[in-house]
Amino acid sequence: MKYTVETFGRLCHYQFSNINELDVNNIEIRELDCFEVEQNYLLDKCNLENQKISLDHEIRLEIIDESNVKVIEFNIDNIDGNIEDFITFFPQPQQNKKYENCLGSINYYIGGGPIFQFETNENLKIEDFSFSMIVFDLDDDEITLMDELYFKKIKLKNIDMGDSRGKNGFVKIWKKNGEVLQIL
Image 1 (tube, rainbow, N blue to C red):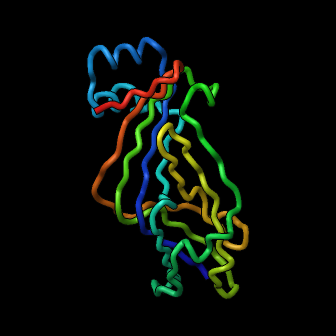
Image 2 (image 1 turned 135 degrees about the vertical axis):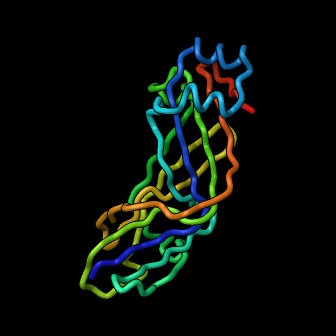
């Protein structure tokens, strides 16, 4: 039987880009705002971009069968111990040699997150689900996101994103000299 897993919670859209010293100086001298920085230095220039659901807030999962009937609903806390893997990303050039200076944008939305699909003829049990994580270790905070969702250790196919609304976030530059510039 085919199943769909819908996730709900706080969605995080992230973008990171390597920028050179000239670009950093241009952003500072021209006093560009968040929108201008994202348009000129992140749009189509990111080397790391995605949307994931935040583990720092409650995540609800609903599993729906092919007849569109909800068969299981649970919170991510119910599978908290089932962590497959995790990745840590450091935007600070002192810890991440791939970046001369790292420009990052983090935006949050509330509502539907990733939607997954899988097929099985087995009975569904909450303990058969697990997930992997990606952690952003920032200068003043840590953001933990669900990277992938698994059923019986098999990665589920991400087929879509749910509807979400609202926005808050920030744009920062982590400079190679150790300074952090918050873009307003």
